[in-house]
Length: 134
DNA sequence: GCCAACGTTGGC
DNA sequence: GCCAACGTTGGC
Image 1 (tube, rainbow, N blue to C red):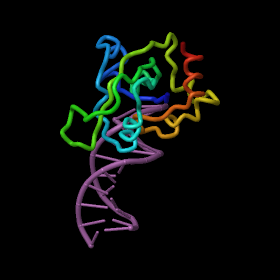
Image 2: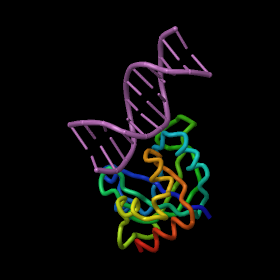
Image 3: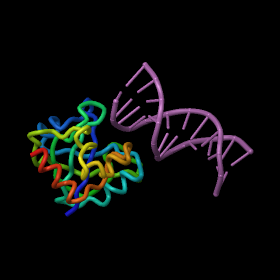
């Protein structure tokens, strides 16, 4: 099982929207590195869902419910989507500020590569987020 | 709203 | 294949 962090702008699609819908195509990724990460996701992998631009915090954990398939928002075969379902909401959403101040979490790929919208998370990092936020 | 970081495009 | 110009992301 692998862990990931996926970003979304809450004004476009928020964690609350995901809770309401119960599932969603995680689509619209148009960056090769992020796309490659989507292709590596397997059913059952867990994703930290982060609000970018507004909120700036990890809101909850989603589970990959379908491995990658053609991105339904484009005919361009280069791009893929995965399906995710909400798994749990963090009682204490974890702010970027907190993440940057934490010795374990500040090493996350997500912190170091600001613009990457889908990034890998280690088991240690994932467990740390759960410990601080659950 | 600004701007740093960085990805993409296109001329040569 | 290099690199300048340009566009986008996302924190502040």
